[in-house]
Image 1 (tube, rainbow, N blue to C red):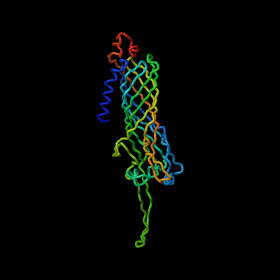
Image 2: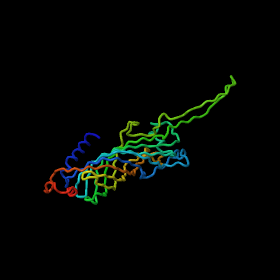
Image 3: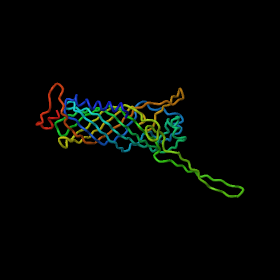
Image 4: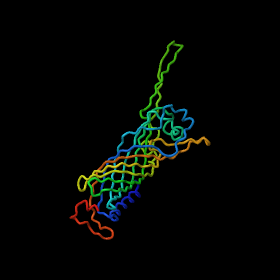
Length: 306
């Protein structure tokens, strides 16, 4: 995160308590787990050479794997039922394909930067996202211990990914010959393997390129359950549409038959994420807009939420 973004974030944090209609501020910490559902947009038209090199049973679908991340959020109550939040989130997405197709990407110069030959082997991806998000949560029963809510989120993401072989491929071929001068036959072996497992990388230690900036937004549902007057357990699930086609590690290139050319094909990625954590609420003694003064300290805590 550069200095300008940090200054903007601190500015928002400093002014929001003053404009909020409530005196509650919350701090949330949580663990998360996410997965890639699908890519949207026009499908890649396969290059003839990609078709020729693709096994009959190959599929583009990856099997998702369990992944973990963490997040922190500052919450400001802006109405009786509504909270505005600023969130910093780190999440990972992983998956593998045991019988992948021959992607158009392997025919581009970008691939030759990492490998000079493709091996028909299982592949995997690991993608990390650093997210700066703004959230709005609407709670249906703010005076109850159990408080379901709906969520709107808008996010700036910085995407890094590695596409690699699931296991390092090694091929051993038997060879041999016959020496007529000595009348001796001999056997030998030739081993071939790639220098590394990496097929594509961006924004990771395996690449010189920076993380890919992308916007995404989505909807979610969840609930709070009050453990004490100040502490609540919170769980939510969110689906977002990310403006990035490298979430599964494979850059998308489509074949233009008229130009006999491979062109980059921008895709959108649908992801889901579940987060589980704790929210701690505190009172900030500020005056309400339009008067109102401080909350009566003798009121029960659930009425102070108003």
